[in-house]
Length: 238
Ligand SMILES: NC(=O)c1ccc[n+]([C@@H]2O[C@H](COP(=O)([O-])OP(=O)(O)OC[C@H]3O[C@@H](n4cnc5c(N)ncnc54)[C@H](OP(=O)(O)O)[C@@H]3O)[C@@H](O)[C@H]2O)c1
Image (tube, rainbow, N blue to C red; front, side, top):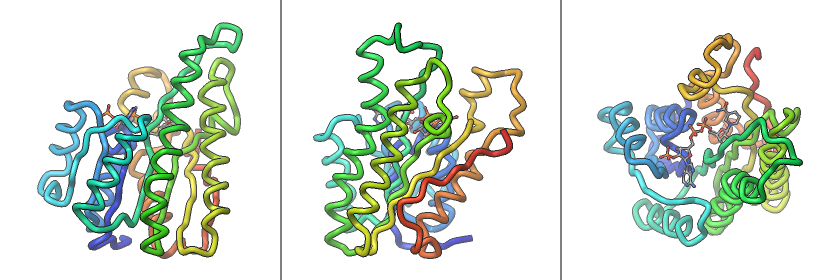
C-alpha cells in the first residue's frame, strides 16, 4: 500500500463510477480528499461508502465546465489545506450511435466541454499552485475509445484525444519542475451504469474501478516520479 498521509488530493468526478473507488483508495492511503460533485444523491452514496474516513473527505459542488466554479473549488481547497499534492480529473461522459452526419452542434459542444474543457480548466487552475509549491501530480482520464474510435462516437473520441494531447502538452511544459502529468486510458469500466447498459456483456473482461484506482494511486506516488506525459492503457482483458 502506497502511503499518502497528509497529502491533499483534489478529485473531480469523485462521486462517479470510477470516482468513488478512487476517492476510497486515496482515503485508505491516508490522504485528505476533496471530491467535486454535482448530484446530491451521489454525494450521499459516497459518504455512506467511505464510513469513518469521511472525516478526511471534503465534498464541493461545482460545474467544472465553468472556469469561475473551478477557480472557486481550487481556492477553497488551498484555503482549507494550504496545498494541493494531487489532481485527478475524472469528469467525462460518453455518447455513441450518433454518426457525424446526424451530430447536433450542441451534442458536439457538450462532449468537448464535459471531457476536454473540464480537464483544461482544472489543470490550468491547479497548475498555478503546484508551480508555486514546486511539486505535484496530475492524472487525467482519457479513453481507449480515442485510440480505437467506435462508429457513432466521434465527438467523444475527439474530446478524449484532446485530453491525451493536453496531458502530453502540459507534461512537456512542466518537465523539470517536479510536477508529473500523465493519463490513464480505460477500456470499459465495470460500473453499475455500464452493467445496466450492457447486461449481456462478460463483466469479468472489463476493468474494475478498484484496479484503475490502484494505477492512479501509483501515478500519484513518488514511485512514479520518472513518468512524464505517459498515456497508459488500462484495458482489462476486453
Ligand atoms: N465508464 C467507462 O466505461 C469509461 C471508459 C473510458 C473512460 N471513461 C472515463 O472515465 C471517467 C469516469 O467515468 P465514470 O464511468 O466514472 O463516469 P460517471 O459515473 O458518469 O461519473 C462522472 C462524474 O463526473 C461528475 N460530473 C459530471 N459532469 C460534471 C460537471 N459538469 N461538473 C462537475 N462534475 C461533473 C459526476 O458528478 P455527479 O455524479 O455528482 O453528478 C460524477 O462524479 C470519465 O472521464 C469517463 O469518460 C469511462
